[in-house]
Length: 124
Image (cartoon, rainbow, N blue to C red; front, top):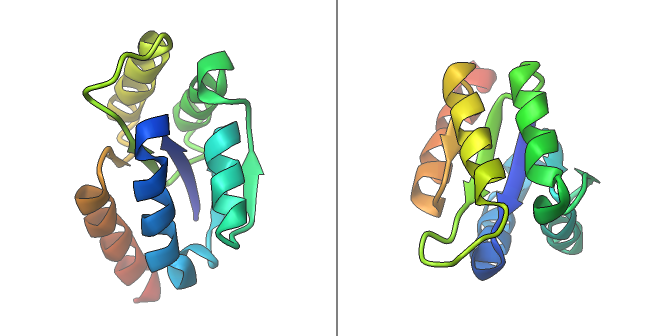
């Protein structure tokens, strides 16, 4: 199983908390992340493949992986109140996930539900 992890700057603390709560599950999957989020994931003790930072193409790299069906899930903790110069890439990523039926969670509550469901499915 391969999961992409992304968080806007204002949501990185929430992402770290989520990763720590779910470390035992996430240790069993391949994690890929945008650059800065990946660094935070590594600092929480997880092994992660880091791509470019989101604003310089990381979101687009993850969208390409989704389009090629190389991802099972995307966890993208977005800051809906912040301005993001790479918003077109964010919208593209979400559209690609919808087109290719890749589950995407944009907040911790949804991420937990998705991770629990996919974890349970893989344990059966």
